[in-house]
Image 1 (cartoon, one colour):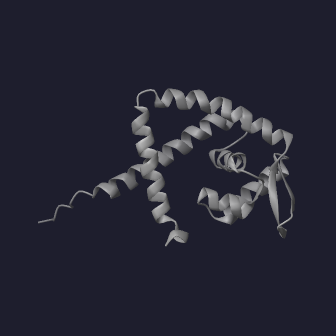
Image 2 (cartoon, helix red, strand yellow):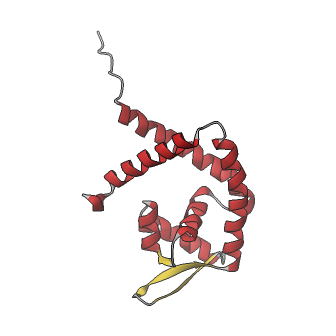
Image 3 (tube, one colour):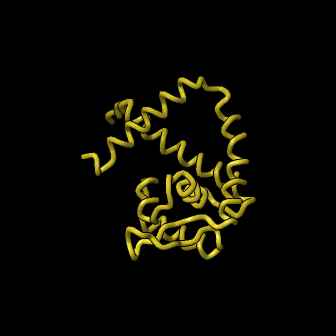
Length: 151
């Protein structure tokens, strides 16, 4: 006789669903920005650059995205080779350059945002804004609890 597995606890169910949603978001993002020559990974890095209050380093971008510096560095190298971003001197660190957009990069981000805004509006029209806000707060709190620097 086999023992039936107990259902996962609510947090485990949430985590599994986040993994599933992440996969779908990556696929949808790839489809949305493919005509621009971007992937979700590149778009995510470009978004982190755009959201930074001031030009930041690859390590700073990686921290803000919860990714490894090496994975972000690989994408930055590709984007720099395509003249989407460039590396500029950093007054606070001689070797760690800061990442900034080129005019081509600014145009790409603008085009991606033009595509994303109506997509997001259409996706959210069946959800109450308060539910979206609560979900965002829960996911942010979970991310903060998982942050190794917060331990």
